Structure formats: C-alpha cells, structure tokens
Image 1 (tube, rainbow, N blue to C red):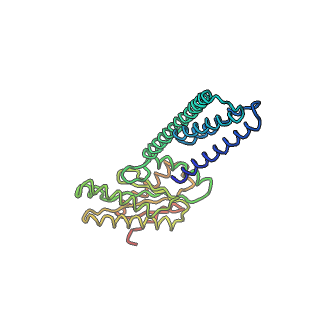
Image 2 (image 1 turned 60 degrees about the horizontal axis):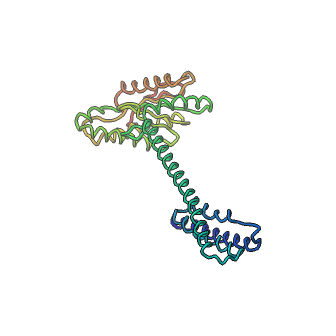
Image 3 (image 1 turned 90 degrees about the vertical axis):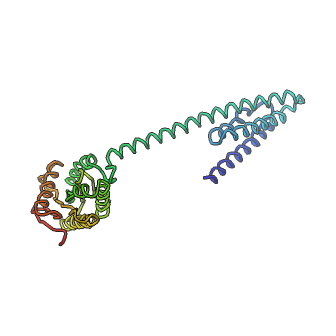
Length: 301
C-alpha cells in the first residue's frame, strides 16, 4: 500500500514538472501574445484530487514559480518587487484552488466511507435477522422464505428435492441435568454436524428450540436416507457427552411429491414422517421416498 502511494506521488510530481516545463517553453516561444496562465493550475488540481494538502502547497509553490519564470522569459521585467508580488498572488490563488479541491475530495471520501459503513451495518442487520444467533445457521424466517422458492425451482427444473425435519430426543434432559450451557453446547454441536454432512447447495436451518430442517437438493432416495442416518448417528454420539440423558435425534425425510404445490403441504408431510419416527422409537429415521412409501431406518443399521 505504501509503495503504491509513493508511486502515485512520484507520477503526479513527474507529470506536473513536465507540464510546467512545457508551458514555460510555450510561453517563451509564443511571446506576450499568448498566455498559458490557466494551464499552470492543472498540477494543483491534480494534487488536490489525488494527494494530501502538503503536496497541494508544494505544487502551488512550484506552479507559481514556473509561471513567474515563464513571465520573465516573455517580458524580461526588471521590476523584481512587482514580479515577487505577482508570484505571491499566483501562489495564493493556486493554493486556494488546490485546497478547495482537496476539501471537496475529503468530503467525498468521508461520504463514501459513511455510506460503506451504513451499507455494511444494514447487511449485517439483515443477515442477523435471518440467522440463528446461537448456532449460526439460518433461522425459521430464512428457511420459510427460501422453501417456496426452492419448491418453485424444483418444479421448473425437474430436480429432486428432499425435506428433512430433525427433532432432538431428550434435549430437555440435557438442560435439566447439566444446565443451559450444556444445552447450548448440544445445539451448537448438532449445527456443526449439519454443516459437516450437508453440501453447500443444501439448506440446513434451526427452525425451533430443538428442531432443525434440511433441504437436500438433487439427491436420490439412497443419498437422502444416508444423510439422515449419519445425522441420527452423529446426534447419538454427541449425546454420549452427557451419559444417561438419552440425547439423540429422530428424523423424518420426505421427497417433494407432485401433489405438494406449496411449502405448507411439504412441511406437513415432513412433520408426519418425523412424528412417525418418534413413535417408532427415539433415534429412528423414517424416509418417505419418491412413491411416498414409509421406510423406517434406525441409526444402528
């Protein structure tokens, strides 16, 4: 960054000095009939736009000096006091112009920085509003907003979409016996489990106190069943941290059927499969496949 800054300063000074030499030479060649006073302000404008105020002062001095030299080459005046006053006046005019440009640039940069901070704050606020603060997973709002869009996308593309509802078994036992800190640890561990066993194209979310949901994209029945099994097994392993609680997870997995035209219907199907798993025994997985045929699978298989 520092190297780029010095490169910019070097380029501005080199270009400014070259311009001053050219303008002085033109004034000398054209004589008193053509004046280039207006062009001597260009280096000062560039300095005000790209460099700091001290460089504005320096280039104002150089431009004023170059203009005075150019004037003396043309008129060859012997009135050095008048020339000095004119040089000071030119310097002050150039300085005011350069500092005005620098002030405008500073205000512009400050405004851009403020806008960037506001944009970042709004983006963070929007992200937090759709994120579960404990687990970092998308929350219920994000999930319910995404689900109809994914259903519509599936209808257009003809891909397979699976919805898994994962309900934690005996989560209350962990809270009651080991405290809410242990319960929070269990929830975060399950969230990490979901991240590990789902793809970036899938959507895993915390949709309730001890309920999670997963949308599996473009998976066949065996793949959906395998993911559910791994999650149930993983939840059981997490529960071993708190012996005697029976912590684990039951899951209901459903394929998006042609009859499910909206998110509410699909959620009902997934809830039905999940409660069926609960009724068959905690830690069980029930998969309703492409033909909506229930197929219970236990984590021990």
